[in-house]
Image (cartoon, rainbow, N blue to C red; front, side):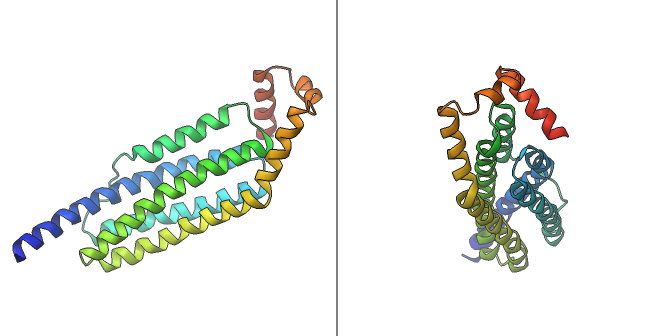
Length: 203
């Protein structure tokens, strides 16, 4: 019985390490993606939130490296297809013909999908760590889980307090043709409008 239990725990340990490698890759992908999201945001508050979470994410990468050290494992990532897909959707959004609060609402949606993915993954790893007696790993990653929850709550608060209402108002204005003049001055076509937005963001 004891041998069987030890074998099960070793197997769970290997599974946990595999998931930590996945998370390590996910966080490093996000370190690269978050600056692009921040640059695409039109709301100063949203941009500040994303930039603040970028700093947290950089710290989360270091925590995972500490977890590898505690486990006597090399800090090596395993491609996280889940986060890669979420990031790809976010990149595609920035290339579409959305602007203003509508674009910001989409960025928040993409950011929260990433947060929820990570919250689920960290929750699972923490439970596994506790199960096999790796309390220090569990405590270390619980810090990250709380940061992910906090970022999600801040994004929700911003969306519900202003961004979503502004996005709905912009949709109403467009339905009534309220921004026809500005579209014409931007070049009249989808491509022209997108180019105008890109130029304004660069400035």
